[in-house]
Image (tube, rainbow, N blue to C red; front, side, top):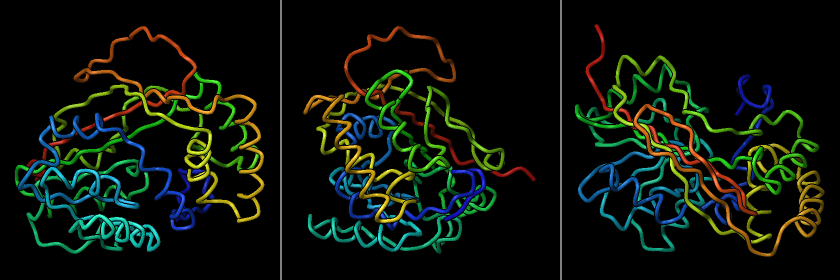
Length: 287
């Protein structure tokens, strides 16, 4: 994949890091999924399409709540991992290797479309119109995003510094608290229903944090095997120096509806991750 708005146009391929992605990026705690359920997303009887599904983290973790999931992704290795992981748990989930912008489904098939950690990668003019076609008339599109905040935590900051040494083009760095940007293309088809930001703590070890970082776009999806090996060796040495064996990542929390008030945060020896939901309701397109 290559996008001039991402990593200064440097190509990346999530399929190159699928094994690490499957092992280290299924990290969302139960509170994350409970939050979706309170928004009536993933409940029994719903038909849900998860776009940019990767290794199927959202469908697999929400399968137990009764929704019928389909996951699509353009990376064959990601879909293979998703199928294998689902089969190992006897989950009946359909995973398809297809671009979200034109994945072939009958009109008004889905109650909900979800997109987690993948929204910037789509061709939005095409996707907005396509989702309008395959969503039911009262369907919803839920966009989810999580990110650590390196400007507030030393471990995240040091890991990012090392990533940038190996891949100066990586633009996934220096995250701050912000809203998910929704391109104007969606205005014709969706009405913004709700936005919410909140924080939850996620436990990590040095090994799992190293794996999570290695599976990021800037390393595992972009670098050569030799570069990844050199990065991992240096990153593990760095974590031995700056991190305890076990620590938490705090996902930042704010519960507001379009109003973003400042809050006071108690800083601990943790990583900081910001979690963000944006939910749009399907509407009638403008003529």
